[in-house]
Length: 146
Image (tube, rainbow, N blue to C red; front, side):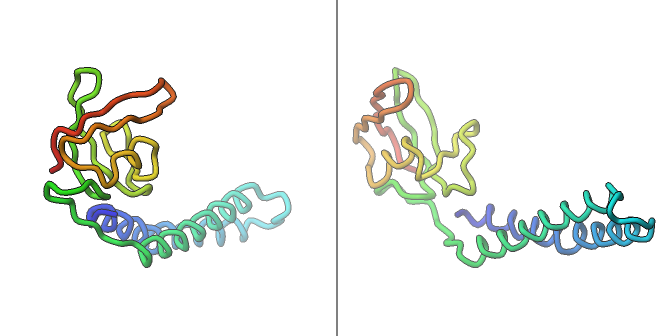
């Protein structure tokens, strides 16, 4: 993953630990003081949200601990972190090859595990790549690897 994504995940983790969990603990305590817990919807909702939040904290810790920071390639073979320009159907498109945590196809960030992203891996400038997509077979010509 990129350094920016790792920092964003670390910020999310910090926010959950320092703000969200203490707020949920207060909500649970306040709901507990209202009496009968078996019929207290606020108590059960807060407990469910706390369970989700604690699960997300564990997930983020695991991701951050096991993350590999990748640097963009500088014109060689395409790998995770590469910024590429391709030509398909007469149109130029730009893609960033990213890890699954960062994928956002609408902004041009495609996962290295996606059909398109995996087809580009280890290719270089000038290569033609045929990719089987739901719309059919598409040919991409790699114009540049940045």
